[in-house]
Length: 116
Image (cartoon, rainbow, N blue to C red; front, side, top):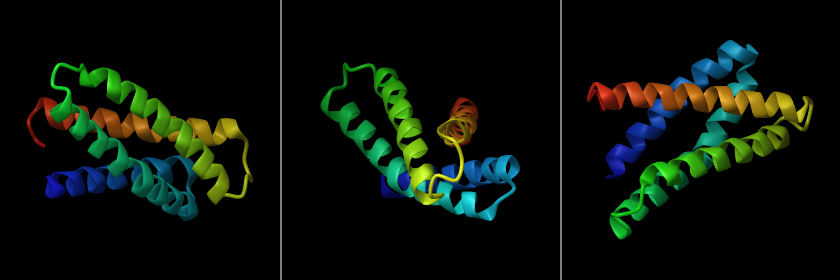
């Protein structure tokens, strides 16, 4: 399980780091994204695993929809904190939305083709 969580985090860092660099062209934001994911990714995934085992009848898609929303909002706040609010909340929100969408899409492709 630990290996799987580490792999998921590494792929998230890679995917979101590339997207962050392409969108911002700033290494500082790649570092902010790294910190954001170090905080949010393990928490979200471990909680999801616990829910799957403790409540097997629960539709995990509901959890991941709510969790991804919470992650995007949390990362919006974290970006503003790390960047000392040099940009608008909209900027941080759209950056978080774009990076998480890319990561989610990449993960879905890996899962669909059993590359994960």
